[in-house]
Amino acid sequence: MGNFKWDLDLAKKLAAEFTGTAMLMTLGCSIAQFSKSYSEVSLGWGFSYAAAIHTFAFLSGAHINPWVSVSATIVGVMEWELMLCYIACQLLGAFAGFGLAYVALPENSKHFCTTMAGVNFDEWKIILVEFMLCGFLLFAYCAIWDKRSKAAYDSYSLRIGFIIAALCFAGHYHGGCSVNFFRSLAPAVVQLKFDGLWAYFVGQLVAAIIVPVLWRFVIADEKPEPME
Image (tube, rainbow, N blue to C red; front, side):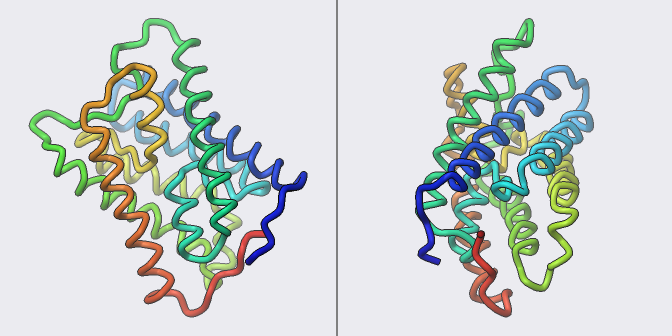
């Protein structure tokens, strides 16, 4: 650690995080807009994650999710300065990608691509559901970063894509299966729909702290190698 510096390589990583997140939001929101069932939405988000990760993983690791970057820092895969840069680019990318889908697609609903609580589903349940879903996702990332999973990176995009699809199958009905706060924040800000948004943040934040701490100090045999 301690190798953070501003150079062309860093610029490429940040551009990849911005573009990858934008790609995720454009594809995911566009598919969700025209999907007629939870199954189609779930598969659509899974394919969107797989496409973005497959395209940009070789440049930046394709976190495209602030909680992944937070977890990577806690586990020891990346430095906190790089984490902050990644998160900033992911935030901008989420707004750019959602904005493109929002402007380009006709007849958007008033809740286009938003994540909202299901019928008779309280906000405390959203916290619990998002904690579990985001936690499962972060466990998958920690497993990929672990030195004992050397072969996992070859199928990185497929693994995360299938996991996202599975999580969406399980949680979409209850609250949209966000697992990525910027995926919820961008549509909420653009359309001024903030109902229950704090619950997604709280549930995901707790998962992003507990999971990597548990992995680093209980599950991992040795400290993972930092990003190059």
